Length: 286
Image (cartoon, helix red, strand yellow):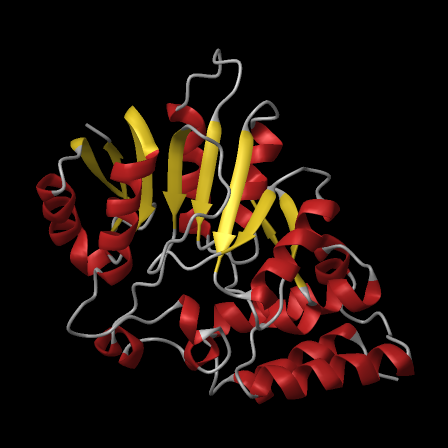
């Protein structure tokens, strides 16, 4: 019979060309915990504990998929974002920690004394931003758009999973039509596609080979394509002195700020993430 220690050895040997040592240990802990229902503390405390044949088979099947670079979140079918559970599959991006920072920025910026705030999330994907905001701002009216029907299906499941009401709309921000929104919007937030071909060459294959390209990539010669469209939309739809929040390409912070200035936004703040990279912007509609 295999032990937990044997599983760690198997994962380390199989994944050394795909992940670094710390990532392998974290992945192994996550997968063993998922399959055995043991806590990380129990796993580390009892390395000689035997696993069943069924558990060994499931662990081996997961390992085979991990070796291809497939993200563990897709394999397990879920992840956590802002303390909440989210279903994920290849139709949606895997939520990132820096996006949690963007959500936190919104929550610390809004006037919670307002009886109702209308929020729009553009390019919602799994729904992680919209759902997290609604969960923490129960009186807010939250809408979210995405061009992908597959993504919207996942987002709707996540709204049910987290017991919140979000209005999901299939729409393309590059070709905005008269989709039905609240008449007044106080906050627009977006984590749109911003990865260039150069950026792609620097990225891990578990992102470029598995996560949805329509949610990631932009033309090399027009990297602010979505930001310009969102800014134009915000000028039209946001009420005066309302807020626009954007997650951005760390290499294009100054360019994004200048674009927003040209379009008339004020009080533009470029903020670094926990890693010290320019990753988010808050701006006020004139």
